[in-house]
Image (cartoon, rainbow, N blue to C red; front, top):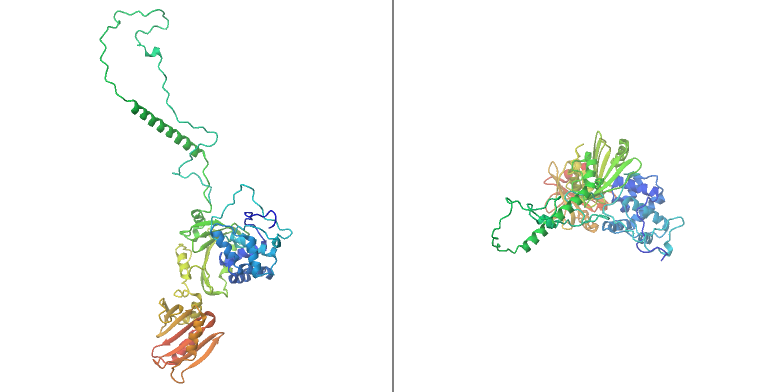
Length: 548
């Protein structure tokens, strides 16, 4: 092991390489905090958002994402730990051995800066020592505690950067049990002065202060002797008196202690509110929704950057929200134009703009879903939610719960379709012919289907759309329609309408109905179209005119 590099030494998030950090931040702005860990999404996002980034630098970031260390490090951080940087270096070079160690470290530091990963440097191997000029990881001084992450959401910042509290005295919170250094506390005691002999004498025969000698009595005041009264029976009151005195002493001590502590609390300055507590963040971004952060678990500061006044991420458990305040409305419009531009990876998308506001919902073929909305006044702010854990319908429902009123969002494209791939396949015919679709969760017609949706069209046409999880299942389905066993003679026709896209039409002898079959191998999807009692030519024309 390298000398001086023990377990527990570490490096916190640093600024890293400016070009790599800036590129990753722009990816987070446009595509959410999950995109940097997905090599396919990262490659596409870098190409669209960072065209000036050198090819070698982009390839470096994609190689790190492809190794899986970014997602693994995020999982460690969410459990409250610190990912091992040198183990990550070895993992990346295990799949991309040609990458220099120093470049891999640069990329890991950049990912750490943008995603809030607090890399720990453990046992740098001899062949992985820091390159010349690279600072060695710092070893913490004895007794210095490392702070553990308290927010388990990705820390990301926006475009060249789309940019809790010290506890105060809480009303009703128990106060401290000691008064602090230098303050002595004692239980109050009640002292009663011992009576003097003079005080016990009767006032009448007391000598004058100026007189001396013996006492002389006036005849009118001379006491007469009376028989002494019989002594009253004595009571044993001693224990009760002692108990009562103890109670009085304890109550008095508590009262004094409470008064002292209350005075100490009153003298202590009130702590400032936590700027990044969800309720405080919600106040600053309330133009994005009256219930913007309802259900948020926690929020975290992601800093600021050129053109960005502030970036905050808030965790909702299954998804995260990135909130950004821009220095100018023009800065917001630049980001809006970028995000609303068509993307080749998108399987379905819908957007709407209004004066001073915009909305976008978008889903990639890999299932990554984003919802973005913004307003230009009273301050230019935006929100973007991104997740692979929810369907588009679920994320759009979460948006609806935020209470955004600056504009009315458009309908979700293909709402009955959970899979973006199946909707991409069906959208042409369903949109052009105005189909009404219903999911069939039982998959009773196709037992091995991952998803099935049935649609009805004006004029009586019907269609079933099916997605297979296993492409081999599609291969078997295709073979059965390209070469059907029992068809009416001279009614069978096959062909292709694109790369790995096959169609076939025929009249089935068993029921006399005409069918059109078509599929897409790259999406593992197929559809069967028919129209009860209509000739094959009419069913075929319906499909050819509308399937797109």
